[in-house]
Amino acid sequence: MPIKLENVGIAVDDLEATIAFFTDLGLTVLGRDTVSGEWTDTAVGLDGNHAKIAMLQTPDGHGRLELFEYIHPEAIETAPTLPNEIGMHRVAFSVDDIDHALEIAARHGCRPLRGVATYQDVYKLTYVRGPSGIIVMLAEELKKD
Image (cartoon, rainbow, N blue to C red; front, side):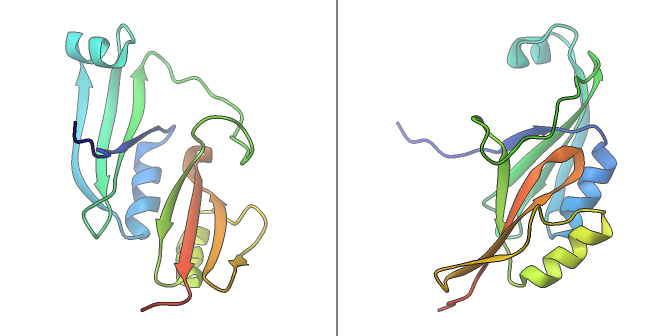
């Protein structure tokens, strides 16, 4: 059976701020909607589910993020995820210029968790705490073909 990754879904507390962050990094908005009804209750497994959603895509066309802000039921705040917690906790992007990407992130009040590291002279990378506490890994390949 062929399988491919469709998207990564992320619940956020401010859809507009999160869209602004990711579009400034280079993603584009493919579509937006407000969804509710029996089909969303069934698909998501949450009765009374009503949410604003946006689908974003990376410039290469291969990666997608589905962002959703719950209208009902009320979203549940959780402590920001730590890098060593079990479960999904980050989304990673390759960038051409990590310093430029960090300038963009800073305009949104987002800073590296610790700093920028170099992995075996192959990548410069960092984890940034993005909107809604999302951990975003940025990686710049140093040895480009």
